[in-house]
Length: 384
Image 1 (cartoon, rainbow, N blue to C red):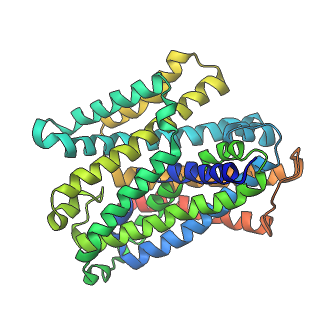
Image 2: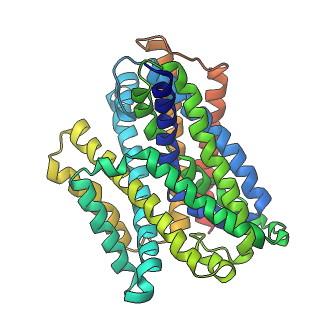
């Protein structure tokens, strides 16, 4: 293998993880920074980025300790048994459904921002338009479009950089001085949701086949690049919009940067959430088909229609949904990933290319972290 091809595969693997992480959650981060205070938001972003990086490295080592490739449900079945397989499946499905619901909400918002000013129409109509386009992609398995991660990731990063550069001259430093301790927990679930992307790691291993020693470095880069991007995106949006920062970040910029930013930001948003909708929707469908033998049409129906039904039933608050899904289901996902790792470390069937130091202690501390986050999220939700 030539050095150029080797480097391309590494960057491709990194792009897959970056592309999986950067999505709908990106747009919620500036809002929770502005609500709780920029310093509080930065604290959560720093801590959660390190936590997610550790969990991703745990998962990567589990994958490297296993000869046959699986996804998280398969690893749960192999190392924890059939009962845990069902638990992991339930957690993953709730996490995926929450993500798909968020993509529907944002997809409808962004389509409305682009076309609604000329064509009009209620919000739910644009959600249905977005859903229809996504359902077609999932049904026909348009993975070629959804999985061009390198091109899509470059476009996503370029679009965010345009917004950042355009907003830098308009930053007002006074917007960073706010603090609201009553909302100090608000960023937790939103940022945890925004940093989730471990679904991509099994595919990264396949891309780096023969170069598995590079997986650790690829996970490191692929996890931290979105964290840095989120920081600068929040810095600019909050610095420009301040208390007027909107839940999806883009509309609040219009008064300061002009209407073009809504269209440009919405195009970036559509690109991000549509590709994510396809990837997560196809992954959901795969769970039903491959793990439980559900027929093709029914697996498609279960993957697509449930999120739409949840939206039409009234679940439409973007920030509340990603905060809850992030804290509860991404937290449970993290706990189960660590438990799978503990068992894989004992019962794995190949020697991994890297080993995490102090893994037992670190894993226990992470489990406590996620457990406390889950408990507090329920308290925070009930109190609000």
